[in-house]
Length: 157
Image (cartoon, rainbow, N blue to C red; front, side, top):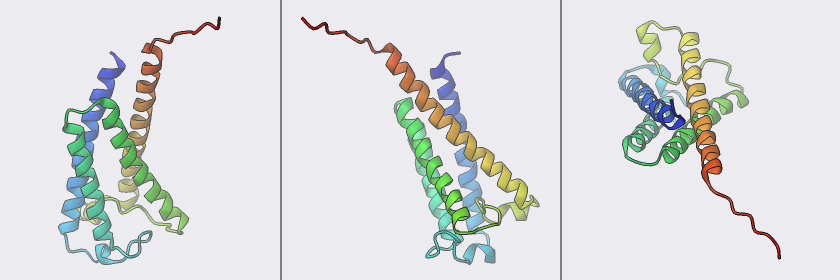
């Protein structure tokens, strides 16, 4: 199977994953949970509900970008951009001393009876999938472009 085909499959899976997580965030935002109305630990001028809304809107924007007929490289860069933002957010939480689990899906896991630790591990796995796939795909495309681009040697006379 060619790397181009693998990248296309990866991007389809990413669109489905992002649609699922965006939907979960939107459902969580609509719930009445006191957890969502407290200030976010990293972005203190926003509530957790507002941070989830921003994250869901970013995910929806990237999904829209993924389904448009753009180059694979552009779509991979969009996924890399989003996953880098999510990784920076998670890292920022650790820097400011947040010791709990990431509330990436708000209060929805608790409502469904899913433990915070499990939910956090799943979301971390998704983030790793987004980062590894997007950066790896970009590297594959870059390498393929370097190999297929003919180089001319200029001899000095």
